[in-house]
Amino acid sequence: MGGITIVPRHVLGRGFIAPSDKLNIAAIGAGGKGASDIANAWDNGANNVVALCDVDFARAKASTDKFPTAKKYADFRVMLEEMKNDIDAVTISTPDHVHGMAAMAAMQLGKHVYVQKPLTHNIREARMLTEAARKYKVVSQMGNQGASNPTQKQMMAWLDKGLVGKVHTVYIWTNRPVWPQGIPLPTEKPALPESMSKENWDLFIGPADYVDYHPLYHPFKWRGWWNFGTGALGDMGCHLIDPAFRVLGLGYPTEVECSAGQVFLKDWSPKYIPEGCPPSSNVQIKFPATKRNNPPVTMNWTDGGIRPFHPDLILRRPNRRQ
Image (cartoon, rainbow, N blue to C red; front, side, top):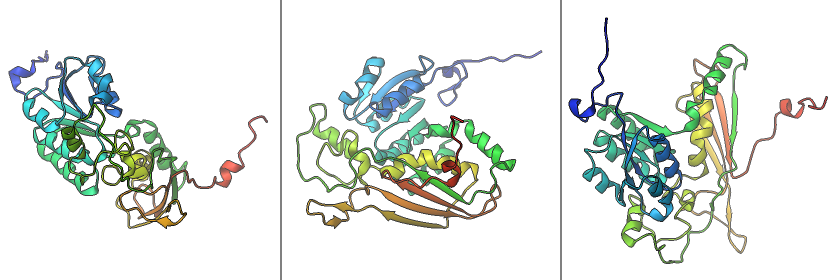
């Protein structure tokens, strides 16, 4: 005859989380997507929300109203230092350029992390976080909701049973950007919002190159600038490329080619704007054959409202009225 005993965390030390415990969670980025991320982690009281960090709490009112007892911070470094013994896990829902730095700081303290997509601002940061998660033995997850969808396993089963055949070409597209993209760098210097101090704007800039505040950067339009975001591909590629990548068992590509849409100024002259992501793009990525799918795969990505033509199979679909 046997049994199990579940003891509270304070008996075993902070490094051990017993099944009966509630997690103490903090949010880095508590407005916008951060509001739903921390609310989902709270899970209707299954866990505790103990701290909220944001550079503009006017944008995070939903979170402060829902969690009035949570301590508020503008600088996540100060929050992690002051509350390192009171936090188990962190949600990170900032602009892309802060993801890697905030996640690394949390993991180095042994905190589990949920990081919104895209995981990082560049490939090097993603590799560093992968190594850090193993080194510090923390649970980590990127905010790629579709990765948990059971239909991916169903598609794998279809491929394994030969119901799909061997895939050689994949088309992926999105209507993004739905924010200004491919526009000239702003030169005006408007005043900061009343809810944001000069110090907090510096925190928003973080590791990026400094620029003066402009509403084309904050609160949402930062996605169209390489300084802060990763454009339409970085925003939606994590979601849309993932099913094909997993189902076909793809690895590193061997070739990548890109064609980007042009920006036209008031005099209709085309211009390349290095600071901004392009208004549209067409990217072709080639992958070698894999064990799951024998032929090489050519993946075609388009954004900015550009989509591929429908295949004949769709055009010849029967009339549903018949």
